[in-house]
Amino acid sequence: MMSYEKLEVYQVAMQFLTLAVQIAQQIPAPYSDLADQLKRAAVGPPRNIGEGAGKRTPADCRKYFDIARGSAMECGVHLDVCAALSIVE
Image 1 (spheres, helix red, strand yellow):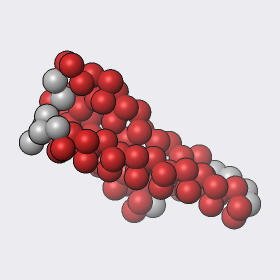
Image 2 (image 1 turned 180 degrees about the horizontal axis):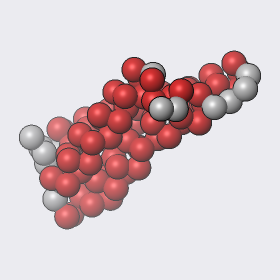
Image 3 (image 1 turned 120 degrees about the horizontal axis):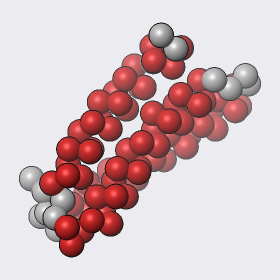
């Protein structure tokens, strides 16, 4: 098991990725760009958490964790848009 896999935040990010893909599959075809954006944003947190965990300095590590947080916030916006447009339950 890699060091990042032991992090609870990584495990939760992976669980969210699975959920985000399921939600994206429910988005109607006219909003396929939104589904694509959600999937790409949901991949960001686990990818950046893993990369950050592999950095040698705390500053480098923080940089990637900050990027992961930004991607997570972006996911929230995409879900808000889905709710506002009433395109998924």
